[in-house]
Image (cartoon, rainbow, N blue to C red; front, side, top):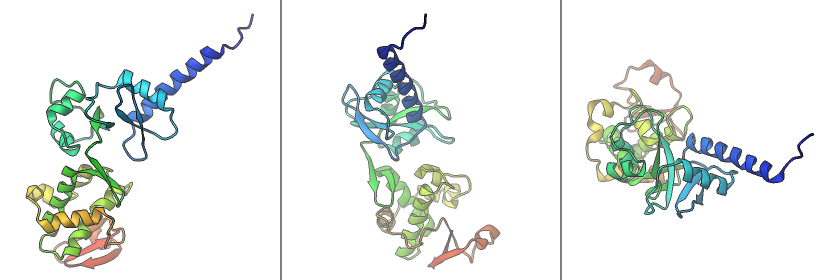
Length: 249
């Protein structure tokens, strides 16, 4: 005898499939393009458009660590090479202890590919098209100061714009820390000048670049042609020269 389809069983199977798919997609995705839904505790979770909110909320409740209710919006961060709890916590504006509590961690050890729940409360969207915490804005200012102190103010804005352009380009990491700490990308990381306190003009230049001012017209590289003999840099199509820096695509 052929068993007739059972509507309730089919619905449960569909929901189970969707829940598994939603969890997988959520874990491998970051913040960009997400909407927000409330789980049963009233905490918002970052969710990909088109997924069923109820299914995603159930999947998150069953598979994710307990999230403190003081955070009204959270997402999933995947650990990358070079990451530490210190850097991840600073990026999202919380302490290492709070990050460990959110993820039920009992040590400071993390592994590449590990997924951590992180808050979005302190992350702000900027017109340039990126989302940064206050700490990340300070890091951007630090790199501007390290690379362009002594340059005209417009040149400082231009350096900030290049960093943002890299975050938005598929050729580079999509996080600020990933761009800044990419191997051999910025000399101030190697010589330590990145860690100096930025000037007020560097902070202002960072905010201007974040608000969408790009004097370079989309450049991804910059260098001082009088000091650099790098053939790769000299071969790049020039967009504009500001101060001592040439900006290229």
